[in-house]
Image (cartoon, rainbow, N blue to C red; front, top):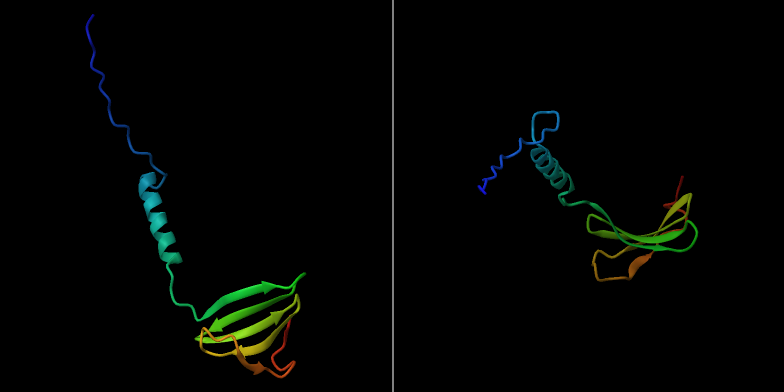
Length: 105
């Protein structure tokens, strides 16, 4: 019995219709995703959010190193207090006059 040598030829690359291989397309797409999602400094940031039941919440929001305590419902957003700039400080500068910063949807 004579032994045969099996010759394996590489298969041609799979094309995606634009002339580039699927691997090249995937790498290009992955680079684009990384570029879009790269972290960049954002002036507005949600620090903490506490739901208070049906469609109500209290949140701490940071904007350019200042923190604000906000309260909200389905149709209203109210500034409850401007917190100190110190990130460790939980005591604010006191409540803002009621209704002075209310926004209705």
